[in-house]
Image (tube, rainbow, N blue to C red):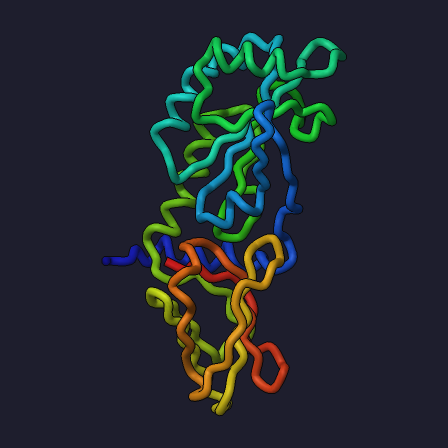
Length: 246
């Protein structure tokens, strides 16, 4: 696969600030008792669009069909609908959610009542985009076109590179190929390196020791997605950041 150098450079720039700016995880439950969280969605490698919509917002209604069309056609982007009221102080209910879903066939959108106005922003509609590359918010605004462009651009970065990593030391190079993680550092050679892999929710999913100090095999059961990796030499981190496991 040919890698676009410009996309790789952009990817590295996005990663430079990722370690301390990850979006706080939020979990929501829809009217059918299905639950999704921001980190769980981003952990699959999908971009996330949160569409803040008012039941009484005419612009929101006019854009609703286009949003469903996009959500159905783009499996690499997850779309949420955070439902509220633009002009009323009434509390959004599942009755309103179900009426909207039936009116606009939002069958590919995860809808929930935004009772605390978490996503109201500056008004309705407001769109938020979060990138699976670094879990950062990469767009907030009223334009659905700008939101979709941003979501697809960040997803494309994942599709056009085989490795996503944040290197803590300039003399270390990390690479990922299938289920193998390899590390090389010029300033030292370790007989053993500890590899710790966590999901974006902070749960440890793998820990192992590389006996030759250079590479380690990750279990094939670990699904494709974005993970947090820490590599330690004598309990001192030499690499710490995000990787994409293909």
